[in-house]
Image (cartoon, rainbow, N blue to C red; front, side, top):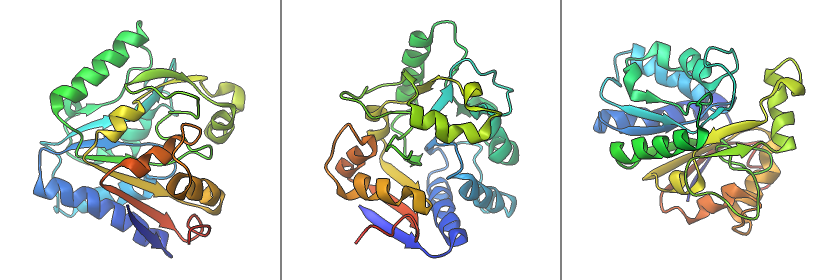
Length: 242
């Protein structure tokens, strides 16, 4: 585990963006696993800045997002399709056909999950998987449970996750109750994983995920088994780590 702590969030964003940009510079056909939420926004801003400066092109890259809400229209302001367009896809030259997210409105969700896994397999191993972490230790939308699912699947979101995501909606009642997410197995197959953790409210779960027992009660703890894990934290998130 390569653990890096930053006093300045701008430096953290630059470090995260540099990892992504450097990969695509050396491997223009890189397969990227992308994340949403508040955590990667600043990193995506830096990636866009690098692109606009002519330092990198994504025209031959491929991306797969971790998850999408079930039943939320793709053009809804809080869908992850909209999020990715706003924060990244509309600002770089990644071809639309190369940018993949699960279809949360599929008539047959199980078939959509299987098809998503097949697409990833055809593209080859994900070169870099970007992750945030939930307050309950979820990665993607893999919630704490007695068992975790290997492949892409439909998940019912935990109450804690609904409360955390309610800030993006008018009320908690508007937060979709289900999502399609890559499974733990799909995430752990990535060649390199980049986990980003920000804020004092994530300090406890950061400690449990990175130094505690490996358990399905904290899905992110399974990342300890990965041979190439890089973790970027701000000082507040790292305060319980020795």
